[in-house]
Length: 370
Image (cartoon, rainbow, N blue to C red):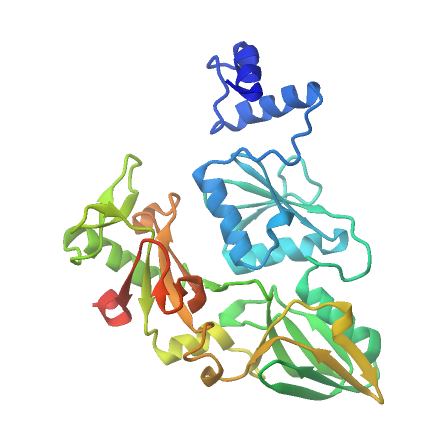
């Protein structure tokens, strides 16, 4: 028996059930108080359930640094960011992941973002040194980097990527627009020349693996496919009931073993176009890079920004590790779709050297929609 076991046994009488249930938010909160009373800081103690772990993985997939995501309890996560970026970070969680905003959540002056399973994500300030340090909101890093040189005066902005270079003339300012996703917009940063938008940029951090949280886009597909996997499963993939009402689990009927997900390949070009570039005018150009102060250099009215991979057309993505794939993975909060959630990832999320990772299976798009 280790020290924690001994401690839990000693304080068990303080809990309503006679022991600490880590799936009970009140029990976890009491445990944290008891630990801190004995000099144990709980800031880095991770008391997690399956759903909380999934939420953390979703945040990592969306490009947030793992070290900035602290699981405080089975129903609460802290996401650390720069103090003046808290609100824009919360707006992005709602826009990108379809979470909801609760302005009245206790424990935070700004409220909290509520994930689908009820987990509260509280965005807290993190003290940083050195300006645009690692983890700073990528949009604001780029906006600040451009505006410090433009400052209302027209300059040429050049993004020098690893695969191509793009440029914009007579830029007078940059503005964050990532919270406006109406009608399928994808732009995170708009470049202006006076009052006219001359460039729309969608930013993906270097470590981000997700293109889109696709609940709305593929709601009908997932609903129809999940029912088919119950009534008339494929030879290699079906759905079977779990103990939770309305939630099923993927399995292989041949081997009677669990599966971790379904990879749907060969998405139609028109869907890929919408997923990657959206509906903005002018057309979005995608930059996959985490911007740092050293990326910006200015000379003779030209701002050159060192960037990662740049996508301006589907041909830049097709056949690469960044090609969109639709992944259906388990989510115990999705009763309407039998416990499956659709997310569009980079191809390298599910494949390594051409082979599927883990216990996933492939279906073609035509099989999924049939």
